[in-house]
Image (cartoon, rainbow, N blue to C red; front, side):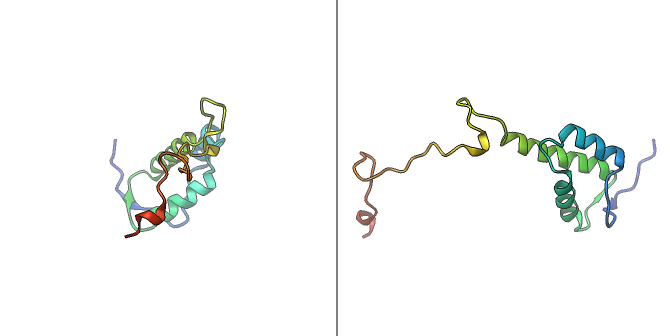
Length: 106
C-alpha cells in the first residue's frame, strides 16, 4: 500500500459526508460536530501536517466525546454529574476547624 505524504490541513477542509454522518450517528448525542470541526481547524491551522486528516478529525471527536461523557450521567445519588456541587464546605465561625483570617495577619 502506498504511503501518502504528510500535508498541511487544506483551507476550508471538511470531513467527507460519509465520515460526518458516521460520527454524528455515533457521537452526535453528546458532541457538536460543528464546534468540534471549528476547534479542529483552528488548532491545526498553524501548519501542522498529517497523512490522514479524516482519521485525525475522528480522533479529535473521540476525545471530545470522552470529555463530554466524563461530565454526563449521574452520580450515586442521581444528581447529574455536571450539576454536582463541591463536597468541600468552607468552615464557618464556631466550627472547630474555623480560622479567623484576621488572626493570620502579622
